[in-house]
Every structure is written in C-alpha cells, then in structure tokens.
Amino acid sequence: MRHVIIGAGPAGVIAAENLKKLDPSGSVVLLGAEDKPPYSRMAIPYFLVGDIEEEGTYLRKSADYYASKGIEVRQTRVSSVDTASKRLTLADDSTLDYDKLLISTGATPVKPPIGGIDLPGVHNCWTLADAHKIVERATPGSSVVLMGAGFIGCIILEALAARNVELTVVEMENRMVSRMTNEVMGTMIKDWCVAKGINVLTSTKVGEIQESSSGKPLKVMLDNGNTIDADLVISATGVRSNTAFLGDSGIEVRDGIVVDDHMQTSVADVYAAGDVAQGRDYSTGEYYVQAIQPTAVEHGRLAAQSMVNGHKTAHRGTVNMNILDTVGLISTSFGMWMGVPGGTESESVDKEKFKYLNLQFKDDVLVGASSLGMTQHVGAMRGLIQTAKPLGEWKERLMSDPTRLMDAYLASAQQQSADLSA
Image (cartoon, rainbow, N blue to C red):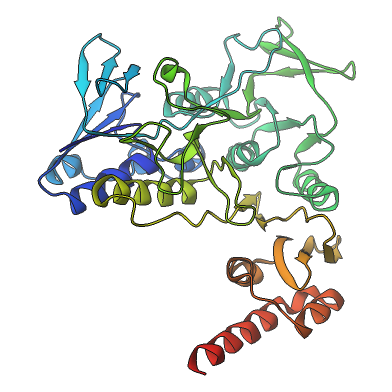
C-alpha cells in the first residue's frame, strides 16, 4: 500500500508518522513544496526574534529522522491530481502513483489588491524565505508597517516589537484580532499595544505603497490621507487554502476541501487535513476551515487512522480555539465566543488591569468564552464547552460573577463523576 501525502506541515508529518505505525509494511511518501525540511510556521516568530536558529523551526530535529522511520520525503510541488488513475503530476512533469492520498497543503497568504504590493521591501511573513528577508530589514530603529492585526498579524507583531523596530500596525477593522474578540476586548488589546510604544491604527486601510527617495525606501499611503515612510512593509491580511492544483480532480472544494467525518474528500481514497480542509466544528456541527495548528495535528492523526483502518473513528469536530500572546498579554477564545441567537452572556471588565472575561450561554450550557489577561480559566473554558453539561444553579452564579468559572467546572466534574458511579 502506497500512502502519498501532499504537504509537509504539522498535519502531513503527524499523518506520516501515524501511517507508519498503523501500516508498517506500507510505503509513505511525504511531498513538501519548499526546499526546507518540514517545519512549523508557528515557530517562525521565534526565529525572527533570534531565540532559535532556522533549524529550531524544523518539526523533527535529526537529519535522518524521516528515513529512520521509513518515511520518504521529497521536495517538489504537485501540478495536478488525476483521481481516476490515482496519479499525481509533479512540477517536473514526472508522475507518482498512490493507493491512498492525503492532501495537507495548508494555506497561502492573500495578496491585497493595492498598488505597490510587489515592490522590494514588501513581504508576507509566511515562509522561512520570507523570514530571512524580514530579518535583513527589521533592524533596531527601522520603520516597519504591518498590514493586518488579525491572529497571524499579532503573532508577527510580537516578534517585530522584540526586534526594537519603530512599528506601525494598520488594521481595517475597528479593533484588533476581530475574528476572536468583540469590540471591548479587541480595543483593550489595542490599548495595551499602544502603551507598549506600538502605533496601532484601526479603521484604517493602506491605499498604496510607493517607492520613495525621502531617506526611506518605501512610502505607505493611508486611506485617511496620511503617509508613513518605511524600511519594510509586511502584509498579514489573511490566507486562503491551497487548492488551485485540484482544478480537474473532481474533488469538491468550497472555502477549502470538503471532507466528511473521517477526513475523506468527495473522492474515494483521497483525504484532506489541516488548513486546506473544511472540517467539522464541534460547537455548530458545520464544516469550515479552522486554520490553527492543534486542528491540523488532530486532522492528520484521524486521516491516517481512516486511511489504514477504514472509517471506524468519526470526527466529533474540533472546538474553535485561539490562544494568542500579544506583547505579553494573553487572549483566548473558545467555541461560540460571539454568542448564539437567544443566548445570554456574562462579562467582567477591568480596563486598567487589562483583564477581561466573557461567557456565552445557550440556556444553562456554556457554549463560548473569551478572556484577556486571565489564563487561569483556560482549562475550565474548554472543558465546560466540550462536555456541554447543563450547569443548573451554577449558570446564575456565573451570570453574577463569571470569574467563578473554575468553581463551576469543578462542580460539574464532581457531578459527572457521581452520575457515572450511580
């Protein structure tokens, strides 16, 4: 049995390792599009700061790791997939046949439609090659403009701040990290960054980037009429799933590759995992792309099980989960943090101490939560949302004081234990 994996990120590596454990006699071929060993994008900020060398981003450290596990790693791109003949065409026009195929090609940064986006000194921060270019220009005292204050943007922000650059963040939404925060929480993150000396411009867009002769190589034109002279511009305005090579494959693609509860696509013997897969959400039961590394790892493991053992284990769905460190301020969101129709919420706000907690309920079940500067509640948030256990009288207690979340979690766990032993 030949298992072929397209994409050498966390989902692909986890899948490869599990495939060899489950099918020791089968062959596993892992295809990576970059000229680097499989690495974690989440480690790139640590490389930017200088905490690690490039090798520190590699998912597995020893040079012979994959060979020792019987995993063949090739550095090549896939041009097309012929699912009828179970054959891949590679970038050099050679072909590779498969028995079972896993697509874990991740995502690609979205290029905003603005003039000057391709100028020298304008970069994404997505690959190790990008990171090396950023390190060259993001020197202490240099002027850097970061376009986008979403999840990815804020991870990059952390690294840039540590490099002691003069940083300006331009965000089109009215708050930071809008996909995991409401206006109160997102504005508090902005205020924290400003207090740390970072210039954050919300409700603002970059209209154009021009070459400049004013002492800085770039001039950033904002939609409010202001300009910023910059040594470096970084675009972090979102990503989209890598599916362009699947055009004639017959594999159903929407926002990502559509998969069922076993990570199989619309075509037999073809599976998808990670940022490219439109998988099940635990809270809603709906299918969408959840581009976070824990989901990719979970997808990769489940896909390997389905590829070898058949469709015995169904995916219950992944809890929507985000944990972010923004210049030392930890923010989290879990489940349906934005609330549900007809639901209720409980909120605790301390703007001076940068502490925030928001709980979202459907009847007396916790369905979503978000927090800022309050990491002690993270485990309770996820646990209560995943168990979906009615809280009874604890719902009203949490409505009065959401900071008693851990007490509610312990009471729920004790009740569950009593129910099991009854």
